[in-house]
Amino acid sequence: MNQQIEQYAKKILDGQLLERDQIDELSRLSTDHIDDMLYWANEIRKAGFGNKVKMCSIIPGRMGGCSEDCAFCAQSLHYDTAVDKTPQVLSDGQIMDAAAEAKSKGVPNFGIVYSGKKVTQAELDRLIALTKRIKTELGMGVCMSLGIVSEENMKRLADAGVVRFNHNLETSKRHFAEVVTTHKYEDRVKTIEAGHKAGMGVCAGGIFGIGETEADRIDMAFELRRLGVDMVPMNFLHPIKGTPLANAETMPPREILRIVALYRFILPKTHLKVAGGRVLNLRDMQSWIFQAGCTAILSGNYLTTAGRAVEDDLQMLKDLGLETV
Ligand code: SF4
Image 1 (cartoon, rainbow, N blue to C red):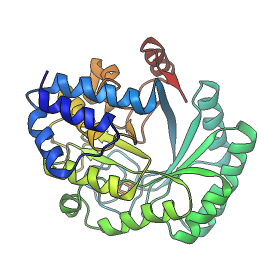
Image 2 (cartoon, protein in one colour):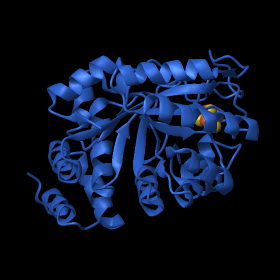
Image 3 (cartoon, rainbow, N blue to C red):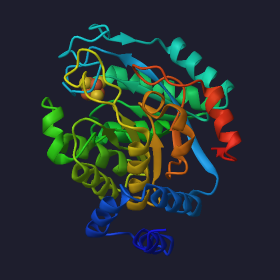
């Protein structure tokens, strides 16, 4: 057992947060001592979250036709991908049916995701009405991902009962401008802050395997810690044909586990949700994410790629002795 990793883990278990230079050292150690990192990340997870795992499903309320140019995204109008250029908007009935189906499978939280930079007031009104229906008719927690949202509109969503708002940083401030040019990193920070001010939980994370350095990954984790988000989705690139990252190499499973474990050391009390790219990149090692410190999963299909059946994920959690909340 590497003594330095053990010493840092014990500091965290004593309630301390590690500083940047300590995390840099852990990052250097983690490559040669990945099993030690996983062991301690699991101990930190158990201390903070016991055997509880959050599970959510999402639906693309609006798919495609996005004006933005995120280099990893199938929904951008800037790239020639298989996603329709005309945005596809689901009806109220389709969204309610999908929520009911998720509930019938045992998924407690349902997220509605809209492509695009922002939503109109009419769309916001409709989503607020839908939130109220999902809450009262199905008793599910509702989350939203609607692009950039003002403080005033964030307040309206919170008042309607949206429990958590998703808006990812995607990567570090430094690397952001290399993968997105149509809006600024600061716009994303402002939306996250607006969600907080409205009193909602904030789900903000990013995507790995998009040309970022290890320092970029650590920078993003510290920024998420500064922003006080309570859920960090960790997506791993699923290269999409037609995008600038179409030929990027996928990440090896143990490298993904190492990054999740490092994030557990940086964000000991924050939910870490392994989301997009889980099935493609982790293959048979999907159940190892909990050993690496993960406390939440996105189950069912992702926005533009196929995920794993909710039933299979529930069976995996049961086999691991983990409980869904
Ligand atoms: S990640 Fe969101 S904002 Fe960026 S291109 Fe895709 S849908 Fe648009």
